[in-house]
Length: 373
Image (spheres, rainbow, N blue to C red):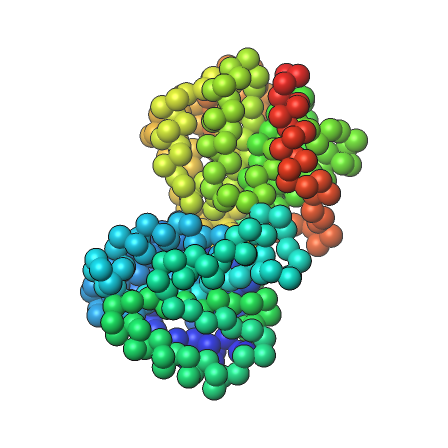
């Protein structure tokens, strides 16, 4: 189905969400049509955030907003759905559009398998009426379902469209770029050269995939790296939890701007705990690149300044490899919690692979590595 037809059926003039590769057609349509326009389209920090934004839109206009997300974000909406939107509380109608990763019977990455199994079950538990949109769903079928949903929404309840792979299409080509020059894979390569045998905890998406391939190319062990393939926004908290328990081991956290933004409160908690053995690196390309390249609000915000305000003893933002190498070496020698923000270009190799070890093997190998260090 063409995304233009889908949006027409939704019959809303306000969209907010977190980008998803399964919803790339919708995301690109919204960027092409509205860009980032607070009156019509907001890319939020996380799914709970956009659900609350949508609630505010309804309170101000009386109309029904659309919230889009990957199904991995369902966990982030449970609280606002149950305690804000629910018809036993404020009865705020919202239309959810959810990309279905890990759909049973469809091959996907390990972090999506269980989430895919419970996607529809969670909607049922939250009392959200839903329909599944497939590549062969017709406009007429969806229009009929939308008519059913209008009755549900009129009662102050919520409805959801669960989008299967390939269900939506968009003909316009939308590209995302920035003015930065350093490539993420090269940045990670420089980090591994300086960190040596120290353990690394890396964020979800292409950063972990690139780290895995760099280790393979160098003939190095993968045991030193914990690849946070799911759980977006939490790798820095994982690093904190590990670092405070092993104060004699230096940990490096490779984070991304979209992930850091998703649970930015972690910066304050990390700063308060202030582990002297943690180096936090935020690679900032101002984009949700792994799912398509849509912008994050951190493109124009200094994570280093935010971390400094939160209480990190040392923060810095670098724009070139010479300064990056210098700051990496200083962080390794400093013996103090440090944050290095690195400006990064958008883009990755077309032939970038995926880890060849399972998530469970990664965990077991990493834990064994930490026992020896």
